[in-house]
Image (cartoon, rainbow, N blue to C red; front, side):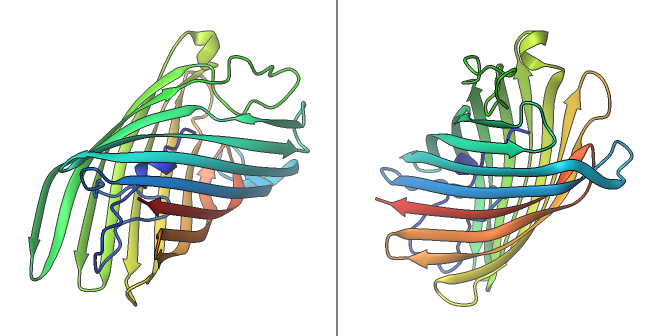
Length: 273
């Protein structure tokens, strides 16, 4: 599943009453012209059970453990438009797989955010943005027979739409997007693309503290067999810092088919300059 987290969740870090950024849901707040944002992220995922093709829970035959790190850089180009890139590294250990380990870089993600409309009044504000993205594969040098791949072998192009709204202390986000694989059948390995939709609600309880909860849905398109899909719940908090923003939380898969029932700890630090 391709998720463009470090680019899609980059948000303006200007002094605002309500923080638009969320852990796993995109927002419609590009950076101001000339502004830069450095995003540093870390995740830890574990799973001991899975959901079969019918959605029934079962032991997956061994525990999965994956640690990931990522870095992204975003720049505000003009009013309502920013662009950036992100790349990561992960280490995987899977007792149910052969080979049972792997480590290496993730794919390179190139993306932009264009705010196409917005409105503000005394009662609140809302905005809508389009987020195109290009995934550059970095997995061609990885030997799948020796290690679990951490990157793909095919290019992908995606487009998402995101909406952000605020009213009082409420901060709402929603997004929907599709990513399509581009490449030979051998490189795609049966993968066609994926569609994802997310919704988030935060409460700006103080100037620097916003607890939040999210619903995250995703479904792959594949050439043969059951198309994996998942529904996850993410809960966490956004903390305003003098240098930017810190987001911490956890995500748990609660429903789906042909996927692991995974739990992921998330930490994202955004530094504005």
